[in-house]
Length: 350
Image (cartoon, rainbow, N blue to C red; front, side, top):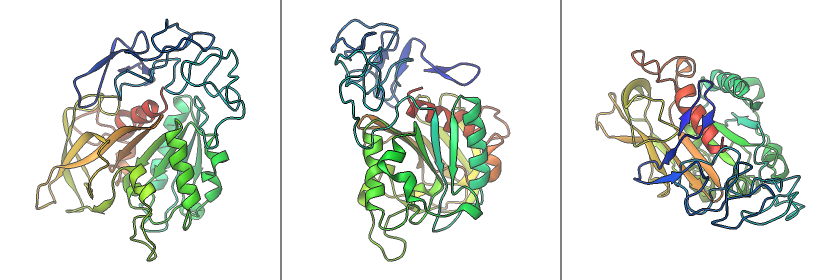
């Protein structure tokens, strides 16, 4: 994987798996995977064309979709989620005839619209507004459109309507920005399940900071939501040492970390979390100088979830980390441009 000068995801040669020694032929669009033809239609092992390559069955797990392709359907004229529906991988249908009514909660794959949701009912990070502004700006420069909800103190109110199946279906990605407590309202059983379905049906989820400290039994005496915790991929325990200088090391290779230095320093909170979802592939470990235990803690990870993708990072506590290099000695240590943005584009199959 590589990025061009405008930081758009492009495919070049061989795609690497994060933490695993494997590769996929990203020029043909699949390694033992299905290849969609222009009319939407060759089955697994069929002839690939430039109109669309789908790497569902055998490409590198986190190597990314090919340009013009998708992990959920053939990308020829049959399209992916063409109209309100779309065709499944390898099936025929010149205009997305299969599933004309679509799947409830299925994301608008290929949509350039992203939701940045910053609502909190517990601790509210002061960096939310700065982070949302920076995220929206970089989204615009990368051909995306951002809708901000709850990203200022004045607008900090749960809005469950944004988590309806119909609403989620309009977004190419959902960014949960430093949420805490019960940001969708309570009990939010339906909204959480809608988000789970959205991701599993092919949606992109980016979770930042204490988005892993929601619906986990720590608020209002309410029981935890296991579906939410499982979706995010970990549960916040604390940040031993508080905001302090930390040393971070990237693990393996992949779009979320390829731009970062092998090792860099940053001033931030380094989260302690409960056991990770076993499917998470950790891409960044950090050690806080303020943590007496000097424990190496997983801070950023990503994974495939059904047909969708999830990325989480606990970094981003200081406002400055969203606008300046995290490490003053390393220009390529920007949290947004060198870590979060590439992960967002990867999750969106871009």
